[in-house]
Length: 327
Image 1: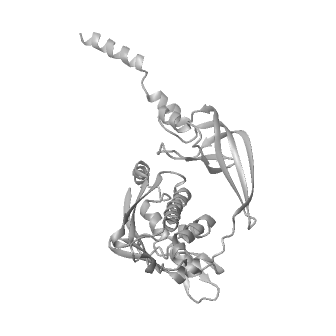
Image 2: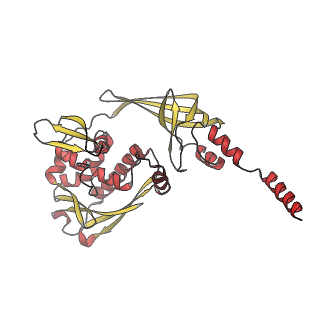
Image 3: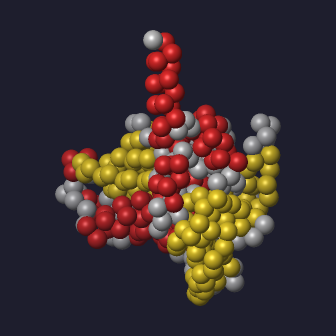
C-alpha cells in the first residue's frame, strides 16, 4: 500500500532552492524511524516501512513517497476483521501527515504543538459510535484536547518525540520559517518557527538507563494465527499471559509455512532471550526474542491439516488402481 505527500520547508535560507544535507538527511531518517515506531507498536512488526524521497528544487520542497508493505497482511485483516491492525493511512493520520476524518482528534504533531511538554491530565471517553478517545486537559490552559488512543500512546514514547524534534529542528535555525505537509493538494499540517522551538524544548524522559539480559529454555504456545510470513513478531502464551516475541533471528516462519501455516496451540521449545530495561522515570519494560528453536509439537489444527493432506505415494497408487478398474 502506498501514499504520496509533500514535505515543504520554507524560508530565506531556501531562496536558492537548496537545503543543507545535515538538515535534510536527519529529518528524512527521523520520519522513517517514526513510521517504524508506529508500525511496530500497532502492527507488531507485520509489514515493512519504506520511505522514498524525490527532490523538487524548483518548488523548494522535497516529495516523499511512503510505502508501508502490509499487502498480504491487510488482505487477511479485511477477511478476518482485525480491528487492531493499523493501515498506512491510519499511521500517517496519527502522526499528522495526512488529514483524518476529524473525529479522531488531534495528531501527534498537533498534540506536541499544543502541550509543549506541559503537565496534562487525561481521561478516556467513549463517543456515540462506541469508539474510545483520550481527552487531555493542559495545566494552565482552559482548552481541552481530544485525540485517538494511538496518538496519545505515541506521544508517550520518548523516541517518537525525539523524531518529531528532529523533523522540525531545521526551523529552529536561521533562515527556516515554516514546515508544511501537503496531501492530495491540501495542506494538512503547518509548523512554524515558534512551534518548532517549543517542541525542541520538550524534555524527553524515560530513556533507558539500565538493561538486564537473560536467556532461558522454555516452551511457548502460539496464541494467535500468523498470516504474514514476513512478520518479525509472533504472539505466544508465556508465563500465563500472551506476549509478542521477536522471531526474526530464526527460520521458524519458513519452517511453519512449509508445514502449512502457523496455528493456535502449536508449541515450540526455544532458547528465549528476555531483556528488561529500566528508564530514567523508573519504568521497567520487558522484550523477548527467540534465539534458537529446540523442538516443535503441532497443535490440533496442525495435526488436522497433516491428516487432511493426501500422501503422494498413496495418491498415486489410488489413481493407478482407479485406472485399472476403469479399464
